[in-house]
Amino acid sequence: MSAQDLAPRPPTQLALIESLPDDASLGQILRVALAVALQPGSGSGAADVIEKLLAIKYRDEDRQAARAFAAALAELQPQLPRIRKNGLISYPGKAGGHAGAASFARWDDIHRACMPLLAEHGFSCSFGAPELLGGNALKVTMVVSHTSGHRETSSMFVPWLDTGGSKSPAQAAASSESLAMRHVFLKFFNVLTEDVDDDGSGKGVPDKITEEEVRQIDDICAACEQRESGFIPRFRKWLKAEMQTEMVADLFQGEQLAAVRDKLREKMTALGLK
Image (cartoon, rainbow, N blue to C red; front, side, top):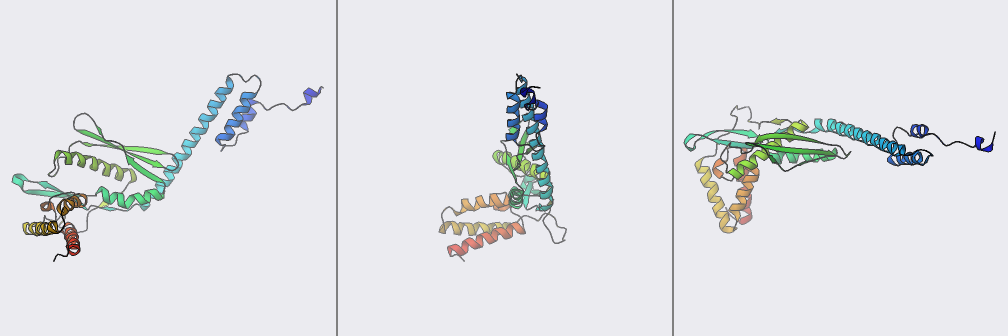
């Protein structure tokens, strides 16, 4: 037997591949792939081995990321709060009358209550540009990403122009997009909403404020405008953000009226008005 016969033989391709641990890193896979490629007679088959090894690695990483996403979502959902329906939509009746109103959970309230909890569990969400489809359909898509690298999307279709309430075309389009954003988020994360407590009175949605209350608010705004130029446009912007309306006459009794009075009382104090 010659010395050449006694020399250790290089491991076979199969032995090299089987030497990889189940949780092999990308570097380990590349080192084995390089060893396979350098073996005599490996030929073009080495490239196939490398490609297959990398494909297996990437699939395994994707599965691990998806499992981490699902586990984090399962931990997050029980911690998400119920969102109160603080928003009110007024529906006009015939001859300019008031036909009724419906409550809804505002996106600002949803965002404020849920986003910090999402971040704690490694989630972030974003919305792509809305897609206007044929007819009167609008598609809004939310992308939910996790620090594991996994991401999922969820979409909702709504009418492009929301004709509920009294809105301009621009307001109606924005309302449609906001509606879809709220519902796709609530559905994906399984967030529940609840009506505003009416102390068991059974009154449901409150009545609109009276003409006298409208006049009082307008008078206060006019007085503030005299002391601070530009107050009225800023006040209307605040109404739009907080109450979903720029018209004082569209406000409702209860929490909305109380919030407006508190806002004006604070401004009057700052301006030295009584």
